[in-house]
Figure 1 (cartoon, rainbow, N blue to C red):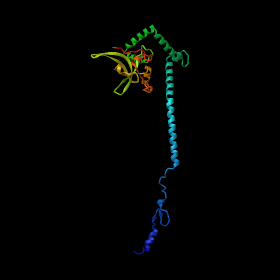
Figure 2: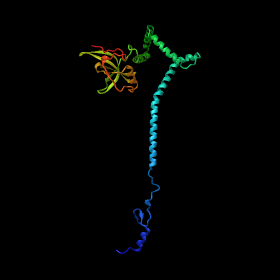
Figure 3: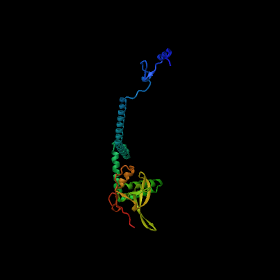
Figure 4: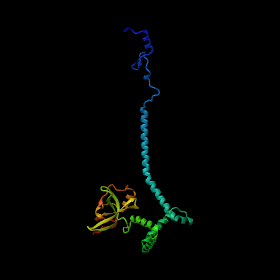
Length: 270
């Protein structure tokens, strides 16, 4: 092959060849310069600023939630207490307003005093007789009789009078399947006469909707576990949805349950 023609040399001068990102004539190629439209990589300053912002937002949110958790029960306590005071005060405050006496809280004090005097009167023989007559009249009414009976059972369940206390003890039974337990209240005992012999049963009330609705189960007294809980503590556990239940429960022997917390209660022997 001979030497290249002058025409080929002239073409090489017009069209430079790129070698290693640099043209043969010493000029840099276009690809070696960054494109103006291409996104620039994020700097370390902007990345650190975003991380600090996220930490501050997370810290502020956690502190805000902590404040809500602390203030919510306090606010609810004051709100319910204020509502109760206003509700009770409304019974007698219209009477004082009609007499021209506008003193806030006077109706509340009068209502509390009235409730105390009713308790003293009902504790007497005359008051018990009047109460019995009133209950007989109310139970004869179609709708009011059911409402009164249900309300009286609930009030008797939390009553401090052991003679009228509907819930005798707190009970734990295996329900609804093996390995699961349910918290209930023993309301009474009975003896089931069978061909194989008598069997001691306890009537256990299991609340299904807070406290005023539930199911009744007849459970063998030997299959009932009695925790070291008073009736009032059991009611608090049911109403709170289990939030107030102790971390450790101890099963108490049935023969030793004769403490003031549950009243005198014994399973009949057959």
